[in-house]
Each structure stands twice: as structure tokens, then as C-alpha cells.
Length: 112
Image (tube, rainbow, N blue to C red):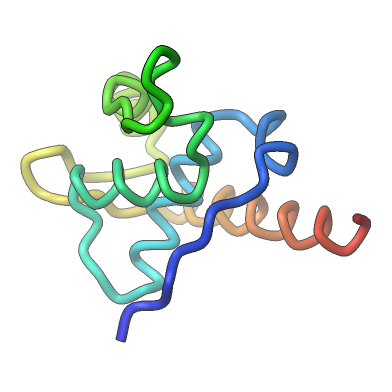
């Protein structure tokens, strides 16, 4: 059974780069034993980090444009593989960054 995804507090992620948030989102989906499709990634990132992945004028809606260009950059930097027509996977380096981001979230929780 997939785990329930919970939003992070905006304060905990507003200073984290969007590429790190996306890598974290991809990793979250993969760790949940699911394929990381573009649609699933949009949903995951929006649920986890609503302020970072919403339209500024309509914050209740996810803005897929915030992922599109960044995903191409991540592919160029060899941090992910895949594309919106198939699914995304993390490379070894991408996985490392996602794990470092997760660790940063856990440390922030400890110090609150």
C-alpha cells in the first residue's frame, strides 16, 4: 500500500533549490515502489511543496512548467534519466543529492 504523502511546511523548503526538490520528489515516488511518470511527479512535488510548484495567481493548482525546464537541466547534468513520455529515474549522483536533501529535512525537524 502506497504511503500517504504529506506536505512540508513552506519554511522548511523555501531556501532549497527547485532542482533538489524535484530530485527529492522523484526519489519519494521510486521509494514508494512506483514508476515516476511526469504526471505523478507533478502531483508529488505539488503535494510535498505546494508553494514552490503552484501557479502564483492560482496557488491551489500545480504548475507543470516549473518542472519541465528543470527536468531537462537535470537530464543534461546527468542527474536523471527518462522523459515525460516514459518515466524518470535517478542516476547515482541524482540519488545522492535526493538523499542529502532528505537528510537536510530531517535535520531541520530536529532543530525546530
